[in-house]
Image 1 (cartoon, rainbow, N blue to C red):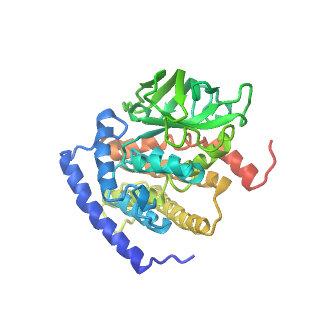
Image 2 (tube, rainbow, N blue to C red):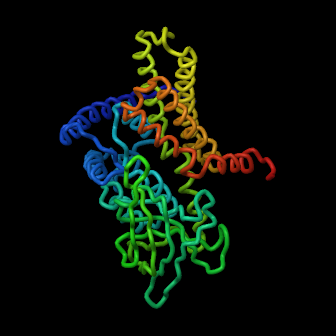
Image 3 (tube, rainbow, N blue to C red):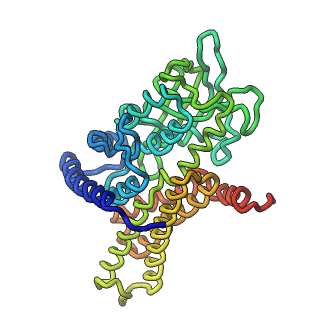
Length: 398
């Protein structure tokens, strides 16, 4: 694997870096430097302003074909963009569930008409997508879901009943993608269909609720006899084939656990910030251990930086394999375990380094709160260890 960047890739990095520095400064100025969480109503609107700035410059989806609003950039250039984005302190991408989770599945399973309609509107933040996976009794065990979609041939569509919960930013989104049980009496992975649902349908109720940190972006979504017409989405509301929703959903979860949702630029930027914090706290620019600091902290900082760098190198290997036509498959569970635990470790080290002052540093404290959810969402790490053990390592079930 060649770890050097070509002249064109270096030029792309310089272009991206210059654009981000200029436009992020302008965006922050437009909002008087007061940047809010994208999981609040006001903050979500603020972040949408940024998303549209990205789209106007064709940076919202750099690796997508130009016809859908992208730049047809290579995966390598996408990684460069992500590195520069987090290096510059770019804000949270509030369109990420659509762009990073649903879109790869649309590219793989969507019809040309679905792609032509959904992808440009997603890239421009005109349509905002949330993920309808979890239910009150179906969290990590997704196959136990009970939300139903009953076929109504007379009207040409589906009747939806049930409830989704823990729907990230669902309170602010316009559309939902998720799994519904379409075969009465089916169990587990069978009889499921992947549906695309506008949230303004009669019979759909979206109820936002606050988290412990005060952000209110999570939502419960209730379906009470809501009628979903076949033509509610041009090209159809079924993604893939009726009854084959599980295999389609597994493509989405591979994206969620693997490369597209958690690019290494996020973690290398966090690790660099941790190193800077240590140097500042130690009072020595070299970063050597200093009096007054726990000597073990330096080792933890160094270990965190090395693990972030290891994730970056592993991602380069993953992109190489992808370019050679070797999909990640179940190995994405290893990736999910790595980045989720890395995120927690980096933030816990920062909090221990800052001590009581950590409560005054919203970037670290808020980041730590979010990091704690990493081992839970996208499939709990306990489930990921089972998948990795059985499907990758070939170990027997207990």
